[in-house]
Length: 242
Image (cartoon, rainbow, N blue to C red; front, side, top):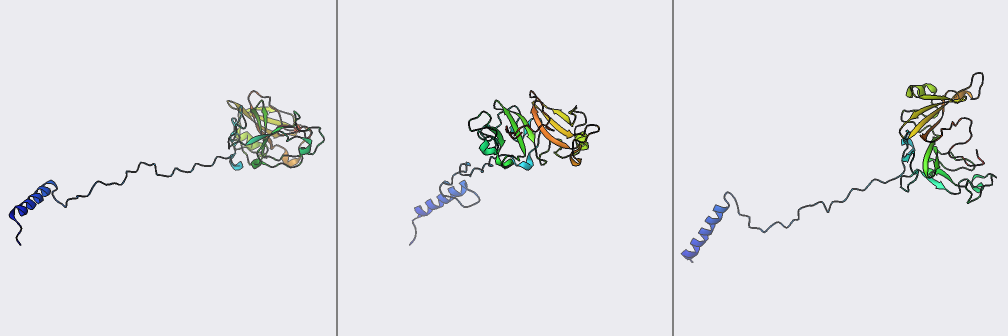
């Protein structure tokens, strides 16, 4: 059956119009794309790094402090990175095994001590890698006791004096009779490197200790500096254990 001429003409006219509007290819008559444009809201956020105290083998002593410990500041502001804590019964007789007469609640019962990551308690002795002194909630002294911890010039406990002299050739040196103290002053604190010395004609120190670093510490600049040699005291010492 033959299609009416009018219908055939109308179809041809529509094809001409579409071809003129979309030259060179097929016509896409599909509807708009419903795929949403990414805005980043569906991307998983990166997992934050865990906050924790710094590792022992990464600690370096400077005039400003050690790790997260800052001279002249609160030693433990309550952060996950705190390196020390106040133990209100650390120096009691029940804890130390002494008869010093220190009971819970005594003004001498509490002590600022490193967290267990830096050394564990043993009866009568605390073999931590460092100790601290805190006065009025302010850190005033860090005393390093571990050869794993260097100063920022690379000096460690046990180093010979030539290492110290090479690292600190122009600093002030104080003669303490049985030791020499090298003072490296900074803005807020001073590193003190103590080297064992035998006085003329005396043998105070045994062979291996002579002319070696026996103590490292950083003091607040407004705090009295104390030698460690022959004192039996210092940060971390409880009454009855000194």
